[in-house]
Image 1 (tube, rainbow, N blue to C red):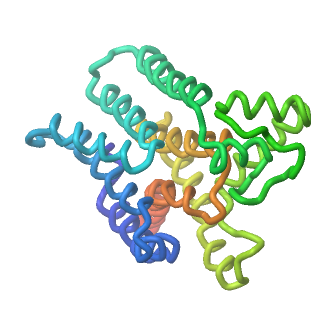
Image 2: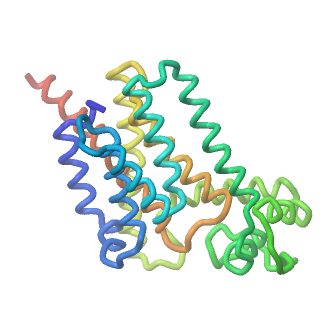
Length: 273
């Protein structure tokens, strides 16, 4: 956690404040921006030292995270695992990893077995929609009724085969990281595409951290895991017609990017001296 120094924090604030994507959704008052704020408040409250009433605040913020967006469970579990690791509450790394995997596995089990709303969710999944409202197949249609995610997948396999299901899920997974849309204007896509540089910078930040410490920094592992889990949940269901679902990972990408840039700048200054 000590990697988040002052230069990194200043860069992160700058990226966040100047991001057209974040500011647009901020002005439209969608829940994703509120979710982002609670996400970081939860992380700060949990990981800060000597904070009064920590347990009460963590529980309250955790409940708000879950209420705002169900994917908040990913942040809660991963940040709790990070807290246990950095405070050495559980000595063995494998125990932390196993516990985290079991909780997330249970969450996925619930996802596959809970009944889905037919018109808004189940029918879209069965129709192979990568983006909501844009089905891959118009027929045959999933019969009306109560269906689970497992039922939808079974329907796709029966009608189109396992290969089509795997290809579809791969398209949905990578669509999560895509910020442009064919139905956006050229200017809109250009502004959104500017954010792609942060994917490269974030990867660079993680790479720099491994070079500095000869191992992956636990905070960065936690953030990358949360990003990956958000992409997986989209792959299991479908993506939003806008970039709204991807919005929640942008501050994490900004943080990883800011660290990479600040470290590169620090190294250049040392060489100049």
